[in-house]
Length: 181
Image (tube, rainbow, N blue to C red):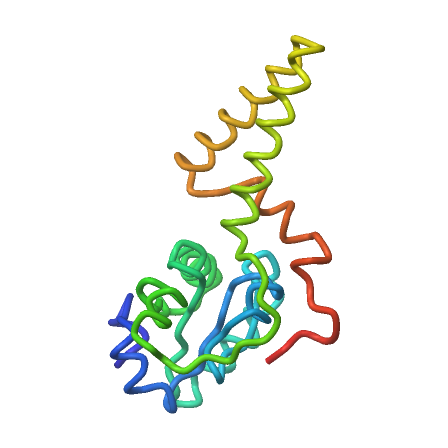
């Protein structure tokens, strides 16, 4: 498996080569603490720029570097950022940790936390519900529900999520101690 030729690999391929790869998990520290591949290093997407040199230093070791997230979207973003920073196109675990678990790959589980996507769905739903309830007394509050809907459409079109970026800053999504490797 060559990091310059392979863009994605499936869970079966990664499982067969797990001892020969460096896994970079780009999810939040909270998601990482909940479940991750045994040898994975947590380098959150929002902090990835700080780790480019470290990841670059892994390349000459002869071990492939594989990017992992929940389902693939953040790993693709990480791949683009790292390629823009001058690294070769690193492979991504296709389907992310969800596909890994479905393939019954080994994992380390700790404190179960909601993944970022679930947190965004909850926050958006709570904001819409609150806006509708408040609008019964203060009619202009209904516009908050419209703004949340517009934000969700923008997030889908651009494949980014402002609410998700904000949620990554909450203590729930940050490690309690030093960042896990």
